[in-house]
Amino acid sequence: KLGATKGFAGKDVVIVAAYRTAIYKAKRGGFNDTLADNFAGTCFEGSYRENKFEPSEVGDIVVGTVLAPGSLRAIECRMAAFYVGFP
Figure 1 (cartoon, rainbow, N blue to C red):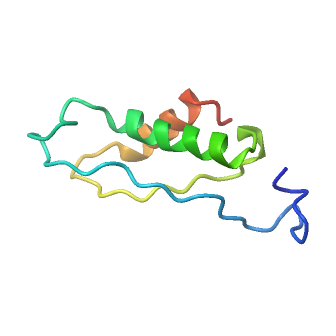
Figure 2 (cartoon, rainbow, N blue to C red; figure 1 turned 180 degrees about the vertical axis):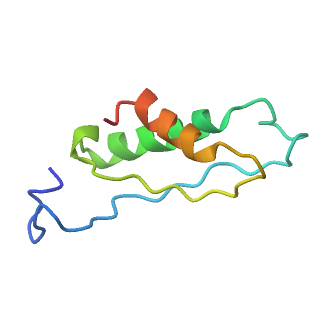
């Protein structure tokens, strides 16, 4: 468990993983019909499966993204986390 890791207290910040989604040309590339929450959800799910922790152990998820004008990326990232089991 993250909080029980040797040398870390329950309130320490621990970076578990960093992932990058694939890059294609906007609106013309191979993922032009793929929603942002599908990309993010895949990264989130891979993170907890690969690093062997439970989503309930996570306090915060930080996602870096390029926001387009009028974008709802924050909502999409939250929904992606919800879809794969983060509380």
